[in-house]
Image 1 (cartoon, helix red, strand yellow):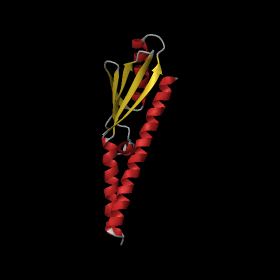
Image 2 (image 1 turned 180 degrees about the horizontal axis):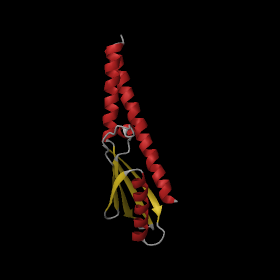
Image 3 (image 1 turned 120 degrees about the vertical axis):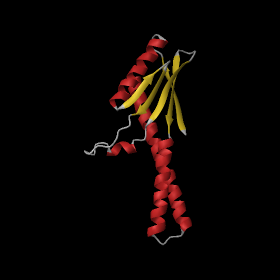
Amino acid sequence: MKIKRTRNIKIKGDLEAFSLEILRKLEIILKEQDYITEIKNRELEFKKRYRSSTNTGENNREVFKILRNGQFKFLPLPNGEIQLIFNVDLSHLLFMSIFFGVLVLLIGWIFTDYNLTFIGLLSFFATAILFIIGNLIIKIEIGDLINIIKE
C-alpha cells in the first residue's frame, strides 16, 4: 500500500541543475534524519536506517517511526515547471494499525463483559483511526519537506 502526492514547482534556470539542486537538498535533509538515500535519474529513493536495539534504550522509539521508505521523482512539464511526485510506502503503518486493533480486541474480550460484536467494532474503529492519524502525520511530514524545498 502506498500514498502518492504531487506538487508543481516553478523552475529557476536550467531543468537539470534545478532538479539536481532540489534532490541534493532533500538528500541532505533526509540524511540528517538518518535515512539511507540514493539518487538516480531525477529520482531520490529513501529508506529509514534499521537499527538494532541498544542497552541504553535510545532506539526504543525507532519502531514507531511511520515515515520509513519511499521515493521522490521529477517530471518536466512543458509550462516551465517540474512535477514533484512523492511515493511513500504505508505497509508498516497498516501492520501497526492492525496489530493495535487485534490488541484492543484481545484486551476487550479477555478483560470486559461486553458483547464480542461491540468489541470487534471498537477494534475496527481503533484500527481505522490509528491508520488515518498515521496517514495524516505522513502527509504533514511530506508537506514539511516540500516547504523546505521551496525556500
